[in-house]
Image 1 (spheres, rainbow, N blue to C red):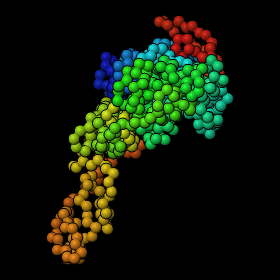
Image 2 (image 1 turned 90 degrees about the horizontal axis):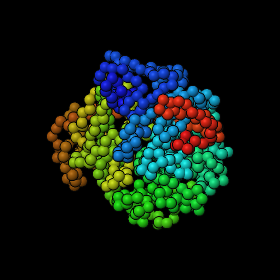
Image 3 (image 1 turned 60 degrees about the vertical axis):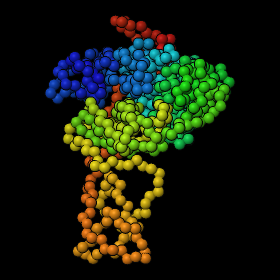
Image 4 (image 1 turned 90 degrees about the vertical axis):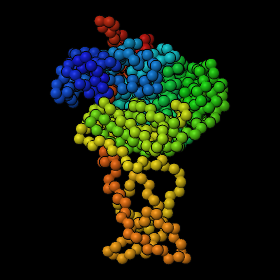
Amino acid sequence: MSYMWVGSADADVGGNFDVAGTARLRGKHVDVDDRCGDASLSSSADGINWGTSGGTDCAIGRVNGQEVGGRDIARQHLPDEGWLKRQLRANVNINDNCNAYWNGNSINFYTSGGGCANLGEISGVVAHEWGHGMDANGAAGGISRPSGEGIADLYAALYDGTSCIGRGGLSSICNLKGDRCKFSLGCDGVRDIDYMNHNSERPHTMSWARSKCGDSVHCKGHVYSEAVWSLYKRELPAIGYDDLTALELTTYLLYKAADNVAVWYTENGSAPNGGCGGNSGYKAFLVADDNDGNHLTCSSLWPYLNLNTDMKAIYNAFAKQEIACNDIERQDTGCADSPELAPSVNAASGDKRVTLTWTEVNNARSYDVMRAEGGCEKGKVKVANVQSGTGTLRLLTDTGLKNGFEYCYLIVPKGASASCYGKVSTKIQVTPGVSQLPVTPPPTPVPTPRPTSRPTPRPTPIPTPRPTFRPTPVPTSLPTPIPTPRPTPIPTNPPTPNPSVQPTPIPTVPPTPIPTSPPFGSSTTVCNTAAAEKIFRLDLDYDDDVASQISWKVNQFDITSETFVDYEASGAS
């Protein structure tokens, strides 16, 4: 398990350790209190094997509390956030059902029953409850208004790679105040924040929330969570972003913006201007997208937001939910000299490591190396930022990985500022292992692709695989070949054909050997959607319309209980 304490040392991100000792379900990031009992194992020559189980609750082997992976994603965007550096308490297998909650200090999960799974075993629910802690400890301070449920849903959605929040948590299809989730899509989570996945296929706007939501904070959260999901899935693609690039840009904007939001929208605002408040979600997104960095906060230097890369896309997403603002002209200035081409990436694996090489692209100042665990659709952690340099290839080795576990990588070229995203590389999936061959760099680097016309093709292509370097172009016509058994090889520097002059026979020259296999071997693979192993094993949320028993403990964990529908007094649920 990532970062688990083993004896007196921490395991690394791959769960590797090099000391003997006893391991428990706790580490520098998470301390799991399992009400089924404290699980522990001693290390051996074979490492530590917690085993597997097809059961749930206590029968799952007491490993349903695991590292909250959203922390690593958040820290790459908010490296100075103090809360992210503290250990988080997670109470699991609480003897009740159909709920999970954040109580201001810990995340808490009930056992299965009452039509609900053990929500501590559902990735999206764990991410949602962790998201409440992230919201409560942001720069704006406290749970955001009018609802902190939307931002917790967004953290979960962008981590899990799905708009269905807490998929697998319920025994029925989700329902939002009578607007049911489409049965054909099968969202058995607590909510779906893509309005196109509901029967109405219409945004749940500020006006809709006033008439339908009442006091339900989960319902009100849909107003702005749908705006951000639409930015990712519809508005950014409408201006040319591919899905991978749109996801990484939306994730960046969300973490940068949400940390400063106090009130996402004004409930009694005038449509579509419900986002005109000084610290609204709409204005926070524009600040995050401002690419010349001359702003301080939304309220102090709002008129100076003069270089927004994607302002129209952000406006459209929020305006459709009636929570944008018309107090500034909408314009997209773009990023000057931003990367235009996607890097070409290769990967090879070794013992607990993966080595990546990729082509330089024009106008890239640096490259973010991103890694996902448990499937390419998952949220991605930034492994490193590699500066652009001389030559045509960049190289990075990612270490401390788990052998036999599949990782997904992509490369993000960046322009002059953090919000200037170039086209993201294709996804590449790699599994480290001791049997893999080490990486050997190609003898000649692959040049940066350029949008130039291709040379005239050869009359007869050479059947040998293409080398990694660009060969000298073959002229469009060749001299008459010498009959067998003395074939005329391709000249390395053939003269320019002249139709008025007979070509001089070319002496026999041995052809340059062409490599018979690509330099990276056979370890490069194409990403598929098979998930390997869930990173989140603690998860949760509950339905608006189902009253739930909430329990939490203080100090020695004497239990106090109360029945409620929407818990918000000391945080959110």
